[in-house]
Structures are given as C-alpha cells and as structure tokens.
Length: 277
Image (cartoon, rainbow, N blue to C red):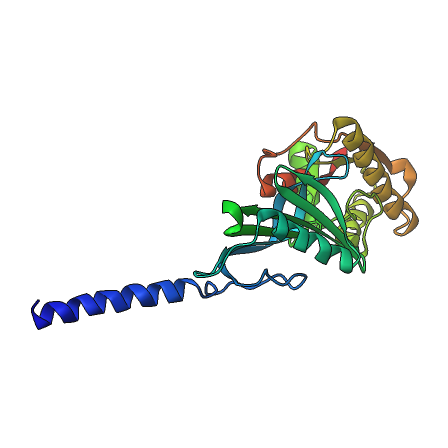
C-alpha cells in the first residue's frame, strides 16, 4: 500500500474515533434538571427547555392529563463500552430518588414511571421513559405554572373593543392552578377594568369567565363562574365599583377565540371577557 494511502486511511480512522469520543460528551447547551442526577455512565444526547410548554402525564386515577409550565426534557444514552442497566432499574432509581426528597410515585404505566413532587409551593411532574433495553432513557420535568401574560389591555382599548363589538377580552388576570382566587399580579388588569367603569359611568358589564378545554365541561363551567365571581368581587370591594353595574357568568370552554390544539391557543382561550349589558 502506498504511503499516501496509509496516511489517508489513518486520518479517516482518527476522524471516526474522534467522532465516537465526541459523541459521548454531553450535547452542547444541554444541562441536567437540578432535581435529579443522571444514571452512571450516561451522557446527554439531546435536550429541550421552554419557559412555558405542555407535557402529557398520568394522574393518581390513571387518567391522562396535560400539565403546563416550565418544561425540561432530556435524553440520555449509555456510553460506549459500558453495560446498560435494565429499563426497570432506571425507573426504580428515579422513583427512589423522588421519594427521598418527599415526592411520590404517581403511576407506573406502559413502561413509564410518573412522579410528582410538591415542595415550597411548587409542584413538579416527572416522567421517566427508558427504552432500547436501557441504552437510552428520556426524562421530562414540568414545573406546573400558569403562563405569564406580558400584555395587559388598558381602559381605553377595552372601551374601544366594547364600542366596536360589544365585548372585550382581558388577559393578565391570574389564578393559581385549579383555583378561583385572583393572584396579586392580576391587579394591573383589574385596575384597568375599574378605570374603564369609572370613566364610563353609564356602562354596565357582564364579567364572563372562560377556560380552555382541558378537563370536563361541567368542571370548567363551575371554575369559570367562580373566577368571574372573584374578579367581580375585586372590583366591588377593592375598587368600589357598584355591584349593580356588574353580573358574573362562566361559560367554560364553550366560546373559544381560537383552537385549543396548541399551547398558545389554550392560553388565549383562558380569559375574562367584558360584555356590555
């Protein structure tokens, strides 16, 4: 074999070897979730993080649910030359880890483990999904939260919408998950509704609560009414708006403004609407 060919083959070999070695390093930009360490002899092959996203889980009753909030997904792969543990061993390790920090194993289903931790007012949902006989596993963690609404309509734009179409959607009113009490950060939006009513003394409004389509229709009807009641209560007690000018109703998911098939769509459908009486 000619010397030039030998050099070429050696270069190819070294390149291939370096690629294998490099492939076993954590993917650039990926990091572990601070709640868990990884299984020994695995590297981060892929990852995804979003400030607000949705993932599917299974609850204590075995019902499929969707949880929204701060999203972390990671895929781990066993390093070359190391024996992979069984898929069950991977799941049991994470189950034991969540128990040690006060969490619970919610469900084991279809080769996946669903875990939950509630701590310091925060709830974390986790799913462990081993595959390939343990050579790979996926870890998904969602810190449950409502989406932060960054744009709040002012009194002038609310009145403009009411004059144009008889109603105005209000975003920026926040509630804890599955609860009806308004959160403190809702104050700017509620203040603008109060300003709208103060500047337009003859205006009377229906305060209508809306939800997305996650959950049963009966439950969402009750929740949307309770949230509308809470907004009305804030306007009456804190901002001294006459109760005679307001009526609260809830319509659940029956009047969406867009499709519920995406995170953004569901966020737009979760709203309070002001309808002129």
